Image 1 (cartoon, rainbow, N blue to C red):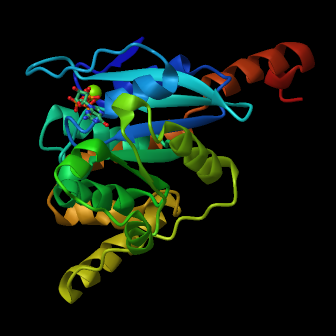
Image 2 (spheres, rainbow, N blue to C red; image 1 turned 45 degrees about the vertical axis):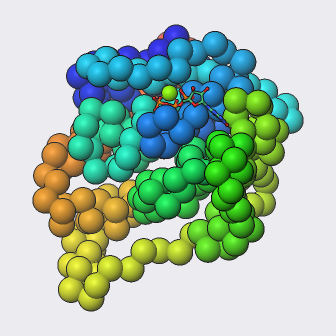
Length: 273
Ligand SMILES: Nc1nc2c(ncn2[C@@H]2O[C@H](COP(=O)(O)OP(=O)(O)OP(=O)(O)O)[C@@H](O)[C@H]2O)c(=O)[nH]1
Ligand SMILES: [Mg+2]
């Protein structure tokens, strides 16, 4: 059931993914978050699948996949490995980041630990640099209450410009609200309005120069600001992944190949009719 990505190579991950998703899913949702924030507990609560929730050193990076139905929609959920950042410092972080950027999920739910929200929000801001389609699930509210923390969720929502859903995933509290928030973001009118992080002037100038070139290359089909930031950060490995992505964009999908074959046989498409 897991999507293994032993070599953490993007190509393997993306090649495996579309086939394993099936044709039925109406939306693809990724669960991201720092290690140990309750992602797998949320995943199990939503999908009803009994996943192992442990983490141990040296394990193969596994992306667990499950599904649930809500308001007549089939939702596919992917449980990403824990990541403190999206700077690809570890295999887990790289897989999480590659999935968020290249996997094209409809929504990313970032599961955070309410007892150390400040540290967790770092990842939220990094995910928001990739996509505005983010929902913040503040989990472990029970523990935060025990510690006497009082979190103003409405204020958090206003500051970040995205939906914020408090939860106690272990007791299945907040999961219905999470399903509704996901539904509204994918199928409803909800438009998140996250604020863009602005860097100092010199860096912003560099970003816009690199961005102009990238927009020409990718015809504005990719988040060029984020790629520019990675390149300015000296992360050249991203270039290889982007080239691979471009190649994929040009390759016909399996469905297209099948369709062409069918049409070719039936109506002589191959003879150029
Ligand atoms: N008190 C409390 N414990 C929780 C809650 N949600 C999850 N847990 C517990 O927190 C621990 C970690 O949960 P996981 O779901 O494994 O966390 P994870 O984010 O998937 O962890 P990694 O995959 O290792 O990054 C488990 O012991 C859960 O039972 C919650 O809302 N409250
Ligand atoms: Mg987990």
